[in-house]
Image (cartoon, rainbow, N blue to C red):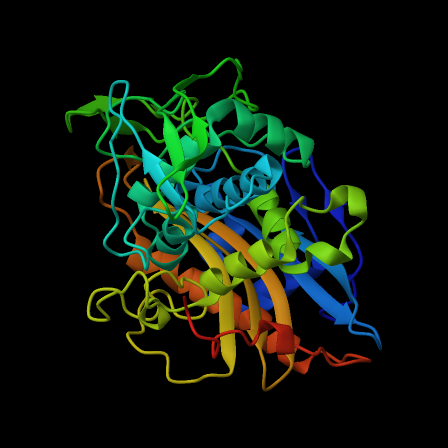
Length: 413
């Protein structure tokens, strides 16, 4: 039987693979045999979680892995998920009256490469807010919004809190503000939160980092050549040791907790209110056209703008209303990654899937010439459908009640 090793895990020195998933992928994706047979070349990692419900709709999880390891993989925009989570946790921990994700947040400038931000015309209040920044990050992967939110979170707080909640090897060294050369994430500008009467509710002063963190892996070099800050080709690999580090496995675990936080042991839960958790989940599942604030031009930000699974980011208008994908993606330097909770309300299908792939045949990091459209995106699309088709025919004792995830008919603030 193809699925005879359903519960078996196999460990090697460098990678973890479940024989069941190995068999499933190789049987259902013959068109990508070269990718599956060369996981080191493509830095391929796949994590799939099947979900079974009991009579009370309580889920249990089974994780299946293909070539999962701790080798370097550039997470790109997927770091917006932990950064957003940390910002909402920090707001709750401050526990100040009238301070929440929709409170006006003014960013000052007191150091090199910092920005003074007082207004946001895309926000319902016309002021910058954590809420609006997170919407921008999740809906269209806005780097500018990410930088502002990270400036509130702070370097030291981010890594201490990540350590506290079980993500000890995540490194957030960069804000993703591409207009600022070099690493300036370790000096955070003053931030003010204002009441509706424009009184200061909370002030966070200019902050310098104190944590001295090393990279959690020894080798974070990629490629055979790279381009420098001036676009000049340089022989030798690019060193990513001062870049962000977030493994697909940690990303998958974080997404699982955002979706199913209440079903984890209390000590393992994210210290996050259900309201903030559902806010995040809704933004992860929305199409840009469904947002009122910010408002997006559908011609530019089409439905699958950031949907690599199922659609390969290539479908302008999603016409079916049965399937929803709550996801975060990353794309840079030849690296592609998608992390998602996928549901089909009609057919009662649900599963978690994370996959990462590196498509850089030339080996030059920073060239901008990668095989995203030829290999990477088609692979992620077909992979996700292969898991969907398996899940659709998989027998379950109890079908899931997915009503809590039907949140898109609610008015958007």
